[in-house]
Length: 432
Image 1 (tube, rainbow, N blue to C red):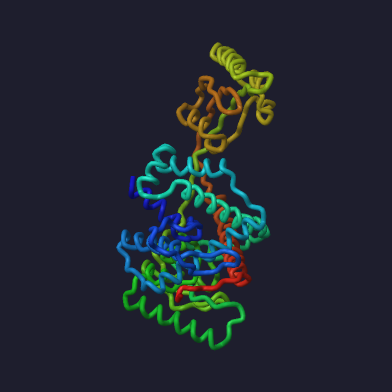
Image 2: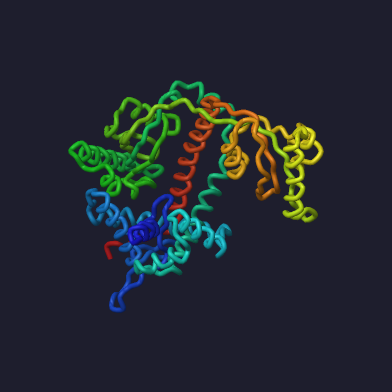
């Protein structure tokens, strides 16, 4: 249990792209004087927050057996992430994003369910590890605020068109497999001078040389990378060649696992990419069922008990030889299928919810179910047939749409965060 709560606290203490980070100082000794390590517009980042976030990073690296980066580099990276975090919270608040107690309660419930414990056990675990439960809840709420802010940015993007998907599917690159990659970015600000470009290129070459000589990639990312995934060891995850910029895809397409690229120049800076793993695309098959059903819907006029009595009467008629199609036309409240004699056509079982899927998967072709209840009402189903369908083309089209969306989303979020950082007043006081 303590290992679980340490993991949860770590997520709160460090500022990952999708992680949580503290916004108030961790409890200090009565004799310790806190200090300010950064001014961020009208807010501040305290030394206690930075130390707590760094401790979370160090604990994770040690647990994973990685090499610890130099302290001054780790401080710089973590502080920059805390600053970005502060700016996102400020922008979220300024644009009217609010999180209610009910929202936080739901998030806490999901966290407890994911770890197969109760809410009371979750609280006990948090407090047993020396953390304040009220502060923990506040951190969860702040993460929800920043996530909603990022979602607003994503929602403002132009939608992916069918033409874009067609063009991508027609390209040779889409037929390749998927790469699990990590990434280091040595960033260049907009309008960088030739002198600064030369300095950053030299830094990228130096990092690359250290990697060639055996420096752990994750440690190098934590120490040097300016990318949003730096504190995750640079891990980007699974991507195909179409969900990354062309200059990256050309560089990694012939690499094997554990190999790295030379520094690659882009408008954002210099990139070093590592291929962690590779997998081929495979045929995608789906189980589809053909069924028909009769539903008696519950409403203000029809109570669940009355609906149950009606459906049982219909079931008795079916058992005694009545025609399913006729009874569906006469009694079913499902407007979509009633006029078709209850015929639902071919579908993936889960598309109508878990209860219907479980019922149909437990039946044989030609079998009529016992009456059962869902949120909509009471049902009787007849399973007609089952088949395996090749949905590779559909899956590839969905993958193409997701890849295009991911690529646009990464670019837009990076641009948004960089612009927000450039426009803010930030004063670093680490030396002090």
